[in-house]
Structure formats: structure tokens, C-alpha cells
Image 1: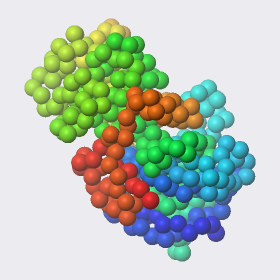
Image 2: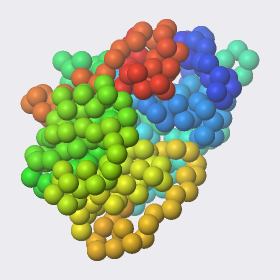
Image 3: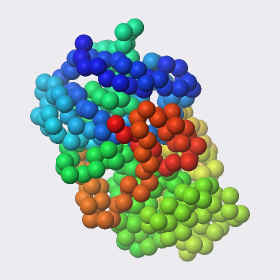
Image 4: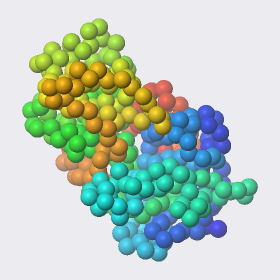
Length: 366
């Protein structure tokens, strides 16, 4: 049996987490043990905790971790003990999608990130009464320590604010990557972002950094709209604005070049498509569960409009996270402005703040 850790264990869907002392199991090949400095709370954690993603219980969630490597398993040559790392999703690094630069679409993504078990059927965590499922997005970082797939650990400089960096590994990466890697707007272009959570604001930061001239944000919460403007949006509209579609088309001179849908309801996705110019491109990013049937007006897709689904920004975290950090060092990606920290012991308050929208990006610190 491995190290003792304190972890927030979820025993039933929709129930509270309980901080308990459990143990890690012995490291396998390509695994490392990371002592957490901070971990963000992502909407996908809330979705899994509610049971919409069938991650087996009891389990430890959390997948926006950042910390210090304490132990390294066999076959790991990318990091060593003492390195500071930001954690992201697990990927095999061997399938055609991984070797082609698209590890977010790894052939084994579900098994590596959603199954709660290693390939050999074992779990990374154990309590006195039995197995605890880990490996959530390759980490399960709602804990003082996490057993991590080394492919998802990105080494970063020791002078960075490590506790704040975890959200770069998922939510912020998703929004920024969808903008920079998938939409690839030209300087001077226009973008509409639907939803001003961490994913949407990641897109706003990326749009501002790439020189978009018009960056519109739609969100029901005034505080989030104000933050979006602080982070680079040229205007932010209430989602309840009468004639919202007409107003968005007016502000973009007839339609936007690009749109980002982080909500992924039928109503919002159709609005994100219908407010594009022709041609124009929309990315849809929200994960609402295993299935989310929507009907799109096919006539809105004519004349060159397109919709693309995007997971994890369609990026390779090993190269993309360092790019975001360099933008941050240059003062062009102030992602810390959306973060509110909570002590790890206050995880239930942090989860509630994330669920209500009172906080854009809660980060648990250790």
C-alpha cells in the first residue's frame, strides 16, 4: 500500500464529499505521485458528482490540479521529484490522434479518464474498507496527493504561482484552445462568447490576446459580465435582453465571424449559429452529460456556417499550457482575475459557490 493522503471522497451521487484519510496504491509504470498545491473546481466535476457522468463510486474527483512531484514510477523520464507540474487529462500518446497532435481525442480517452480504474483493473486509491476510484481525468486531485498519469503532467517553472495554475489544465485551456487552435480568428475579427464561466472567459482572454476587434459576451449574471469586460470583452449583454439575436447581429455588423457556445443548450446553440455571418464558425464546448440531444435549424448552417464540437480545446497540454503561461508573463492572459481561493477543508463551500455561479473559478489550496 502507498502513502496516506487526505481526500474529499464522494460516496453517493448528489451527496456531499467527506474529507477522509485514505491511501494511494503503489505506483505503476508511467505514474507519478504529486503533492497538491492547488486544484480548480470545474463544471465537469459538478456534472460527475450529480451522476450525469457515470464515474463509479466511492470516488475522488478533481482534475485541475497543480503541485510538486514527490515520487516517480518506472518508465517516466519527463519529470522528476521536486518538479512543479500542472496536471491535465490522460492520453495514451501512441494512437493516431495522439501522435497527430490531438490527444484530447485519444482512442483510449474514456478508459483513461472516466473509468475510475487502471488498465489492469486496479484503483489508484484505497481505504480501510475497500477500493476508492481515482484516475478522474488522469488524476483525482481533490486530495493532498494524487497518483497521476505522467502524460498529463506538464512541467512548469518554480517561480510561478503554483496553487493558481491548475485551471490551465482544463477549463481555461478548453476555452482558450477552442479559440486559438480551432477557430483561429484573424486580428480584427469578431467573436461572440455565450457563457462567462471559466471556459467562456478563457475564450475572451484568448480573443483579446489574438487581436479580435469585437468580443461580445452573453451571460445572465451581472458580475460575470463586468468581469468579462475587465478581461477584454468589448461589450457584455444580459442573456435576457429583448431581441438578443438582433442586437448581437447589429453589434457585429450583420453577424460575427466566430461564436463560442459554452452552455450547449438547444436554445443557446441555435443562437450561437444564427448570429454568425456567412461564412462563420461556431464551437460548442459544454458537457451536459452522456447525451444532450439538440435540434439545429439546418437553414442556419447553409451559406458556409459550421458547428464543431471541441473537447479540452483540442490541444496538447504539453505545448499549450506553456504557451498560456508565456502570454500570462507578458501581461496578455490575466487568468488569475477569475480565481477565488478556498482552503481545501472548505471544499463544500467552494462546490456550492461553483454551482451557484457566485464564483467563476474556485481553487482549493493546500
